[in-house]
Length: 288
Ligand SMILES: C[S@@+](CC[C@H](N)C(=O)[O-])C[C@H]1O[C@@H](n2cnc3c(N)ncnc32)[C@H](O)[C@@H]1O
Image 1 (spheres, rainbow, N blue to C red):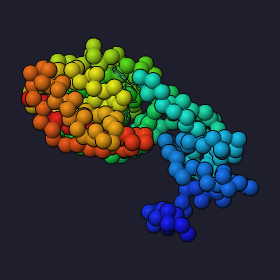
Image 2: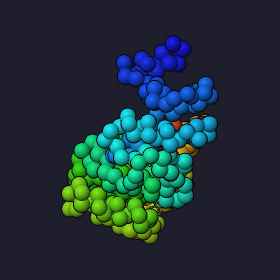
Image 3: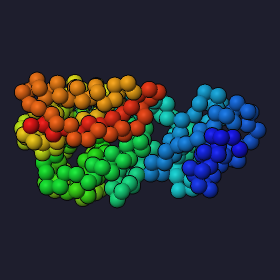
């Protein structure tokens, strides 16, 4: 066993390495195909999401069927190509089975979504968990609520007084409404359709979540303005390795200073590797 495989086997502690299990189900793989086999995939509710490298494109139907046989409770396998645009919409193709709408259960929270229309990042698992532990009794503003990624775990577990959950994409907004009902948090979550720059309240929030990546810094003036003195900002950003955490901290401090306010950095977190050389990070700051 090579050094890398040995490391993987150790990490999996006796469980089969994913690509090994998949390999057993595929016949006559060339060495190039074998080397390119996916080592991981996501299971969202009853849907398996997998990235298929170029060399395996002609065999993606077989890969889809093999994955379906590995997950008997799943109904569909989709190939994920990329996440696009300001709504962070997935570009996917069904490669086995049928149906892309599902209910994903995580940490006692139900998320209904269509994986062909809205994203669900398993890499944000720990951040969703963290958000389920803060906000008790507070007025929270979730500026980029999506289908309720952070709003729902917080509403279900921490029970804030109120969460204003703002979402611009009408498809995500409809799922947000459904998920509020599904999780019985109608008394806590106030869903608001539209652009957070128009809809965020001013000076009242104990906590603001800015769970968006790409151009989040452009929205900082509205995030900071929403907070009462002493409120907490959760600022997400995709940051080049060399600028972690210097740049997000600088952006938060500059945006606070522009409103004559100070920012005390409370926590810094690397959420996940976003792309080569780029990290998805979160900076928590207390805004005075
Ligand atoms: C997909 S989420 C980010 C991922 C999420 N934090 C997670 O845990 O997977 C970002 C959401 O912000 C929404 N959005 C983008 N611009 C917006 C704006 N100006 N106002 C409100 N929502 C916006 C997008 O439609 C999207 O649903």
